[in-house]
Amino acid sequence: MAPVRLPADAELPLLRARVSDLTERALVVGDPGRAARVAELLDDVTQLTANREYHVYRGTYRGVPVTVASHGVGAAGAAVCFEELARGGVSRIIRSGTAGGIQPEVVDGAIVVATGAVRAEGVSHQLVPTEFPAIATPELTIALTAAAAETGLRVHRGIVLTGDMFYPSEVITGIDHRLWQRAGIVAVEMEAAALFVIASLHGIESGAVFAIDGNPLAAKDDAMDGYDPYREIVTQAVDGALTAALDVLVA
Image (cartoon, rainbow, N blue to C red; front, top):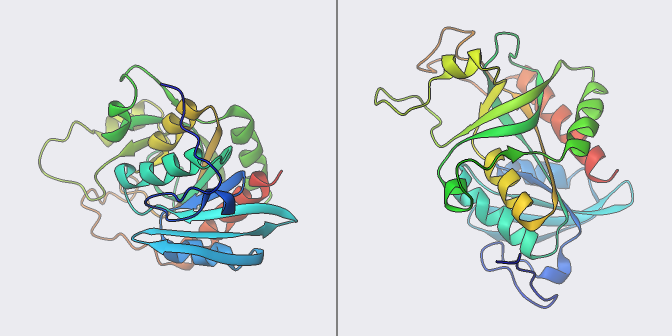
């Protein structure tokens, strides 16, 4: 089935934005509050819609028109955002979010640029066979790594794990973070695999950059009792990841 492209006068069903109001480049974030924060960095900004977890803004960054959209937590809901943006004619989507470190050196305050994602979530398996890889656009990955380095923060690059669960469970889930650590996975998050697969299906560019807000393995806190994403060191990394994402989005 060929990718769907909607006419300019169409309204996206869940994002509630008109296709004609979208731009070719979009920054996506999980938190609607973070989308509002990004909007403050734009010029000539307008909030287009606010429906459920999907808050959409349009503005310019360094003179280039951009769309900013929030997608909520988890791959299934985020996939709605990614799919509708692609159907609306967006040709470059970069996700900026938070993630947990997996490797010992990937700790609070660092930035991770994803080269690809392990598809340990549910939605992408309903889109393409399990064997299909979830890979970011290489040129965007290289550019995001360079832009993140400009922040002066620690930067890591590699494959991330996309899963459906945030807090660990005593029930066997099939996700062994220590196994993934041995395999070289750098961080864990919840939406990148869906983005990369949907972007591949639509033939558009995609990338992802993350602020690390903890590392339960390094902290020996498997239950995440000490998780606190509201510290200054995390805020600095979030700001750095957003800046890198915006710089590459308009490059």
